[in-house]
Image 1 (cartoon, helix red, strand yellow):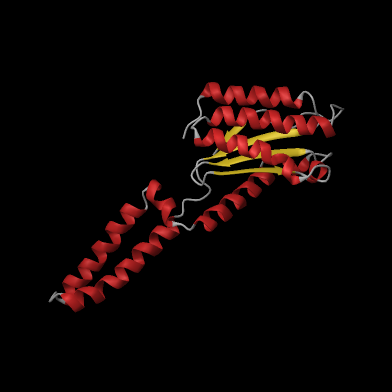
Image 2 (cartoon, one colour):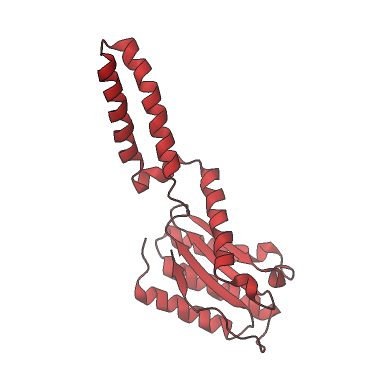
Length: 202
């Protein structure tokens, strides 16, 4: 998962263009993953290492020392394999991954200063690549004026592009769609552009 410098510039330009038509703000965040999930790799490896001695006792004549050594080797080998990023995420239940991605999106909303806008018309476009999770979070000012389903079109467009490996195009499309919603409810005014017109890759 990468975004080239050119793609990042395109997204920044799309944000700038969209915000020229509204007093709202748009912030984009692309996360490689919402968590490292190492706790799950540790838990699965420990479980296997705890079960292994019972099997070795039942089906082998190994000494206590060899069983203990086997237990250590099983834990170490499984942890090394399961902590590889591709496999690590598959060991985590989908609902846990979604909950973690949702938590990360809410954290980014606060970290990026979205809630500091006086008119409360900020929109965060968040993608967590490892979880294939897309979320659009609108601050109270705009959320009170539009039905949450309004953002679904942008979410689906972004998900489609992410699935095709065209993350940059997906963000540009989502920015344009969110910008149109903001422009309809928060036309340009004296509100300053307070947040950077760029995508944050974390």
